[in-house]
Length: 201
Image 1: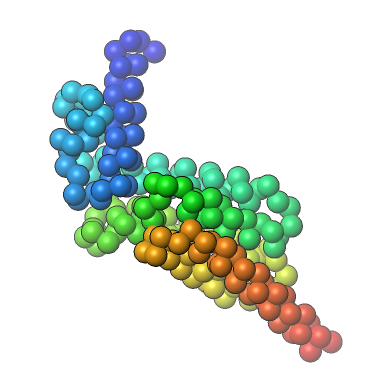
Image 2: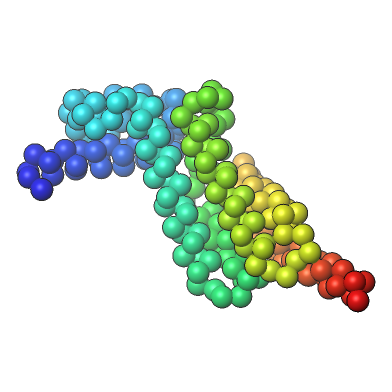
């Protein structure tokens, strides 16, 4: 890689980091391009060389957020082999996130709250939500539950409730509450499955 290419790459990384800092803490529509450029400490031309405009920068910011969160959740899940523990691990990862002093809620919830229905924010949020639902459906399918889809939908509601509560009430303990509730739900889901098998005999 040549030195000019290295400089351009560094400028793009600095712009993405600046966007991540500002968009997450202050809001996408509140923060203008000039603020991002100043925060990144790069020339204005660097932004338009690296991105077509603010929409692409927003898209990259949200894709980056999605990727980092997916990595953290996957690492938490893969630390366990028991299907039940793998589900509960998601709420443990949430607890670690909520305890961070710079936690400002879900970047995708925040983004869609100020976005138009057909915006890049809405599109990125749709992709993220599909990932959340598929994640829990895959995990629910691995436990011995009678209705994995219903179980997954319930676990998603717990996930969303914990995220919203932690942000709105500044209550990081919401993750622990969601985890305990998930344990109760898993107990009952297992019992329903056992009863269904018994009735089929």
